Length: 184
Picture 1 (cartoon, helix red, strand yellow):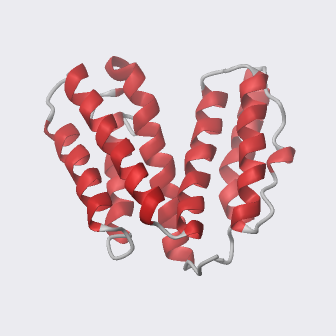
Picture 2 (spheres, helix red, strand yellow):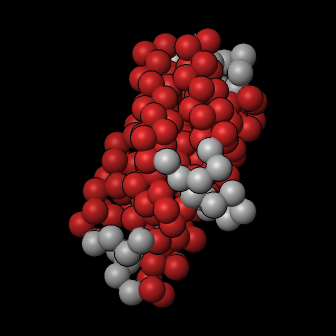
Picture 3 (cartoon, one colour):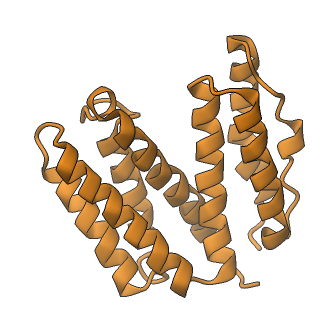
């Protein structure tokens, strides 16, 4: 397993989260497109791109090029265009494919950790059933062996009510700080 600085580890984690959020929000394009909302597709991809810039020296050229193409396409849209948004998502998948093929195992695992946390976070926010929440927690637990860290996913309560979801969301968003406080 490689050595990743805390700064780059954080950038990989947040790259994973924001890119995954963009992909998920693309399925709800008309509700999540707006430039001015902090949870919009555009602001999510902008945040992911900020992390890509931090990681520029770490990412292979084809990864950077795929991400930059998707970012430029989404940033140029004035209003939702389903075909172009689908192309943006394809660029993000191309980015992930190239990154998985060429990235260091630890770097890839950190980015996937962010993606899984984002899926769990959105499953909780959108009120998905507890079975789906448990599936994301199990995947996080399996990923912890690659990262050689203790991911306390079992401490996230199964959430069905809005109050339980709020508590679970707090636990989810503390996962990275608890699991990756020192770099690896």
